[in-house]
Image 1 (cartoon, protein in one colour):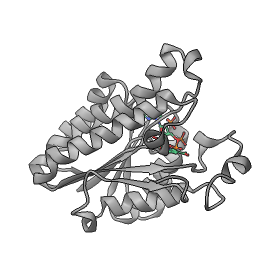
Image 2 (cartoon, rainbow, N blue to C red):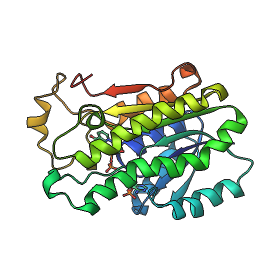
Image 3 (tube, rainbow, N blue to C red):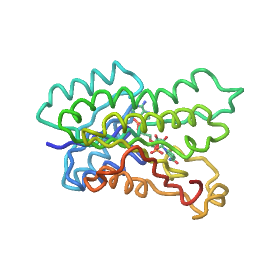
Image 4 (cartoon, rainbow, N blue to C red):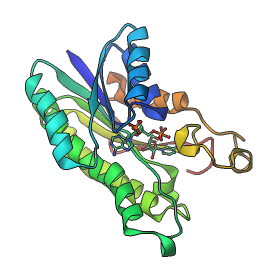
Length: 242
Ligand code: NAP
């Protein structure tokens, strides 16, 4: 059985990715941190597409939890192959640098950057042995241009872009591709409360993007057709920055 693991699959962009990959016939492994009700809604949406899925609750930033839940799932399901990994889990804790607490710095780095390391390390060996894999990392415009008030988030996403490019070169020979997707302003819980009208005026397309528009790009990079694209960062920002 071919599986796709999406971290942070319970809501927002992650949920949209789960639904689109379900349409491709994958068994969907839906990771989330705490919101079981939302994760169950994603699973129901996956089932509506005629696919099936499994909920895997763990904090991607916690190495022990990742080992306990994901590591044990992989050990117990040797007949199943994780072919697609979408490292999507992420949080923001915005604060001007001079006022930022150590906790605000650390929690954001842990979710995006440490999370990538913990989860990918579990999945990578299987992909290398099968000589096939698609890894897509959710980064951000902030990781490319830097965003004031987000030194923690910009650092986490810029770090993840570097890791994407390095790992892409490590595993290319084995037909494992590693790419990143960099959204601008996307309408999800994460951007709730932002002044959408004001910010949209800065975007050439004059609007926020949707989770579905990001999922479309992820599905392309996860497809067999994207076989010669690796180490790339794909911007999805309505023309805001490139
Ligand atoms: P969201 O609606 O806030 O959803 C976040 C998801 O990540 C939830 O499923 C949440 O699980 C999960 N999550 C958070 N921390 C986690 C952890 N430590 N371990 C496991 N799961 C965790 O966010 P979103 O807007 O869809 O963002 C998804 C990704 O896109 C993030 O990496 C974000 O940085 C990136 N991004 C978003 C935008 C945007 O404008 N929205 C722009 C650029 C990049 P629970 O439901 O259990 O809390």
